[in-house]
Length: 129
Image (cartoon, rainbow, N blue to C red; front, side):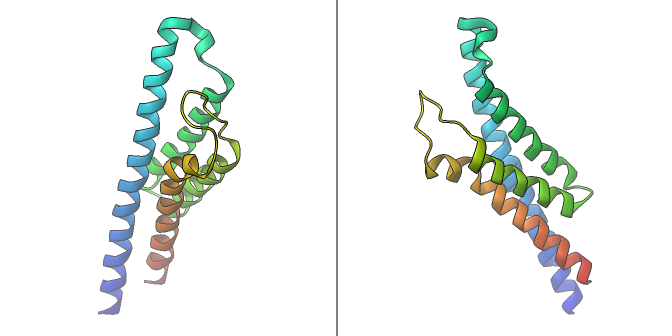
């Protein structure tokens, strides 16, 4: 009885983490591609700045974590938590939007942190079965 409850809880955590993680990554990718493509049409390759590359690499790390989640929950959780920490330390201020403060991390990094913690908890529960 207890094993089936733990299995269902771990399964629900995994599904919730995938939805949160893919939603957060999709939001940032949509924003990044839209903003960069609009600037690329006007400025050419000058629109691809260091900040865009940093945000892109951090987002790709999170995307890899979401993709890996179908096979290895522990690795996915670690990648998403690393991505959230990198968001907190490396995202530069984006001048047309808002200067860097906690709100930027709450929008971009917190969902990745939540998804990563859910993956690690689901992995821990599945190991105990």
